[in-house]
Amino acid sequence: MATAPTELLLVRHGEADSNRDGRFGGWSPVPLTERGRAQAARAAAELVDRRPVAVVTSDIVRAVETAAPICAALGVTARHEPGLRERSLGVFDGLAFAEAEARYPDLWRRLIARDPDAVPEGGEPAAAVFARVSGAIARIVADHAGQRVVVVTHGLALFHVFSYVCGLGVPSPDAPVFVLVDNASITHVEHRAGDRWRIVTINDTAHLRG
Image 1 (cartoon, rainbow, N blue to C red):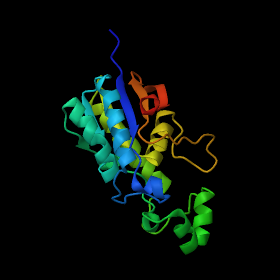
Image 2: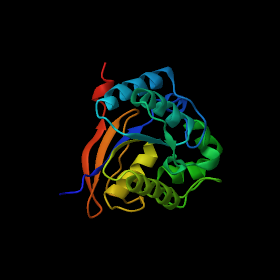
Image 3: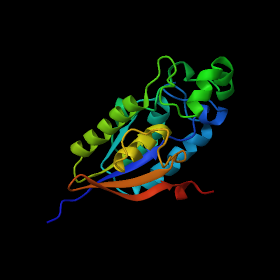
Image 4: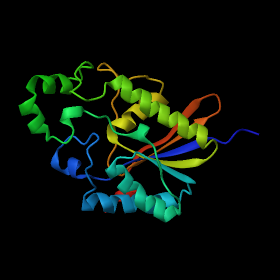
């Protein structure tokens, strides 16, 4: 009998203050907006019908707040996984984009040009982010083999998940693809025997319409 796949329902957190205000979120403790809370409730209603058995979330506030209505709807307690955190950009975390550009013009230019050596003080290199995010996904798959699990995380962290699932390795400036899914979207991937992955859906936002 074929081994059942391990299914991950990847959810980006709902709209946070940083998304609304054009700020770097990073590891900042920014909460969801009213709209973000409504998005999280919509995601919860959709996920109930898919019958996942567990919820694993980044321990950053906006992800935890997104996971809360999902857990309430499913009757489970979230497991906090620091490996699912967003990329920290150190001194940029919490700054408005315009503010970061004004304070650190050279570093800003290098960062938006995707210079891999442009890491703000206290921030994380891409290789470090990839290592911890891919490690977290590998642990979730190992802990929930053959099960369906909700994973709540962040925009850039999810890009690293895609790079891991597709076998692309650490994202680089010359990477042929960049993926940024919407707030409160659901992406469905399956881990199968032989360490193979299947992408079922990407950036599903049908539950947010209206």
